[in-house]
Image (cartoon, rainbow, N blue to C red):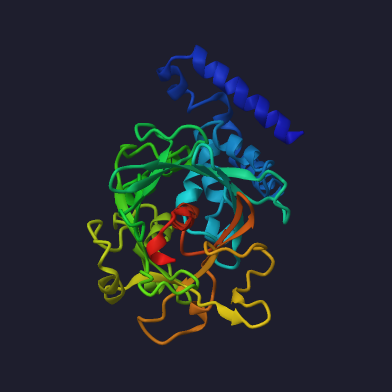
Length: 375
């Protein structure tokens, strides 16, 4: 009943805002619902957030943030970061690190005819539930490279819109990739000073901008031997210390300390794709694929996906943190990202802290690119 009431309040507020001038709305504190007792409003919104914990019911929490400024401020305090809650609520969540305690289960659907890939958040253990749409990517072939344009909408892949999230670009051979973020690395600190703006979308930065945030490389197979691909991901904006006990990545630090002015970029945004060794020396997080084991009975390479992957494919992989910066510890055994095939055009993608769903999706897109030199 409370949810229906809030929905009516929000729709009524939209009508009122259309009839009032901006000065009149500002004089009233944003809307007529802004003057409700804070203690009562806090309790109501807290109960809504706790009860609407999964999608599609989670949309009511988003609706509450759109009622007025005071409601949005309280929702900001109640809704926790994905790494703490394990929940994706607002569009900005796709750029925030995933949960620390478990893998967040997602799946990717491929449309071969349009060369489009759709990422969904899994709502149940079954992949037939439809899921909650998160991101989409469209493949664009060019004479010297291939681009994957990543968007917040399923049908809009224009770089000139606010739905542009970033892109993935490969070299001519398809052995090296760069992940570009449509949001400036310095925008995190700026957004922290105006936290209400983060809940709508990433409108503070020019949608057509591109900032390198990760580099992916596949090892060349010069001998032509059959076996799993070897890949390495250099996360330019994530320090290696983020996976240590109590470690935080710069993005999370900016979120927890919204008024600090420290940029969220850990390394220079002009880092080269060939600087993987220097990335490790500078303390950047490096992900490598977990080595599979040869199964004598099945006569194939095997990885334990715990039931999340059912079809053998050269595209399947699991990524862990590289221990080359020091001695290997328990944190280097945790699967940070796993990707695998479960149908002709259906794949699972599970990720966790310290990478975001946007970064995980971009890494998985690189696995779709055909590269004869690596197989």
